[in-house]
Image (cartoon, rainbow, N blue to C red):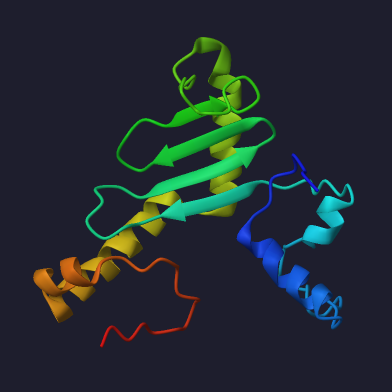
Length: 161
C-alpha cells in the first residue's frame, strides 16, 4: 500500500510489537510517540510533526528537518533555513524560504522545530561529543572509521574498538 502520510523511525517500535502479536500496550506507548505502520497503511493520519537531525563528524553545522503538511523545513544552526513545497516540488529543487509569501509558513515550521528541540543546544552538545571523540581517538582514526550510520540510543556508549 502506498500512503502519502509521512512516517518516521519512531513508527517502527509500535509496528514491530504489533507484527509480533505482542502489542503495543498503552504502557508500552506511555512515553513514546510512534504510530503503527499498519494503522497508517489503513488510513490513519497522525497529527504530528515529523523530525530528523544530522550531526556528522566534521560538519560545520547541525542540520534539523521537519515535515509539516506539504512543507519540508530544513534548519541549520549556522546557515539560512530551507523550505520546500513537496506537493509542487517533490524533488526539492526550488527553495522557497526567501519568498515573502512564505514568511508565516517559515515561522510556523521553526516554531514546530523548537517545540521538539533547541537546535543550538543540540548542535553544541554534538560538537562537544565529536571533540571528545577526536581527542580520545585522533583525527586519522575518526576519518578512517567514518560516521556511524545510526544515532546511538541514549545511555549507550559506542565502543569503536
